[in-house]
Length: 214
Image (cartoon, rainbow, N blue to C red; front, side):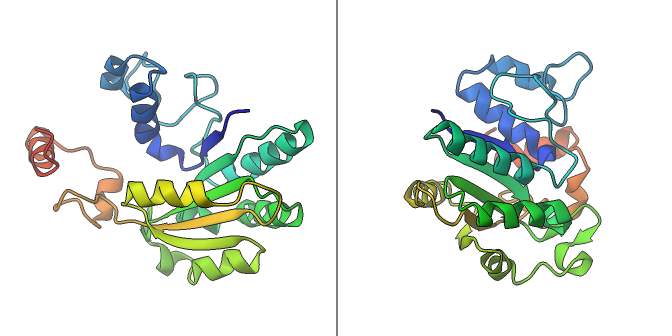
């Protein structure tokens, strides 16, 4: 009867690990070894690596398909849980995303909620320059979803929005969460170079000071 969350954008696994650690799924000390040899916390989630990790992700475009399958299975089992899936905006280039969107709408999987992290960047450039994503909300609506836009950095309002969404059969729900890559650290904000870079000691110290965590 519990809810499930698929992190389709597996490259954001460090955020997932932090949440799971703070919720008591594993010791917080494990976070010090993310991505290191022998660590249980790989750079992308892998099958069975941790309790609370539902799916191996990282190869983009598959999370919504799995979440749609979970939502359909939950209906068959009369499981009241909701299925959430977090997508990247660049992931919406993939045809499998839209195939799953069509299927979910056709079957009126109202307990399925997708959140698109719309930071307007992909690995190699601006999302809009690589593929014509806009108008993103209206595209999802055209596929039969009820879609809304939100400030992806306002965690309180985002949580309230997710709680208010209907929890019964009907159109699946999509939240376009507008975000800024690197939000909160001035020298990282909206700079796609940090998609790959690791801060050195001085940059880390500066970032922590700016975030009030030093």
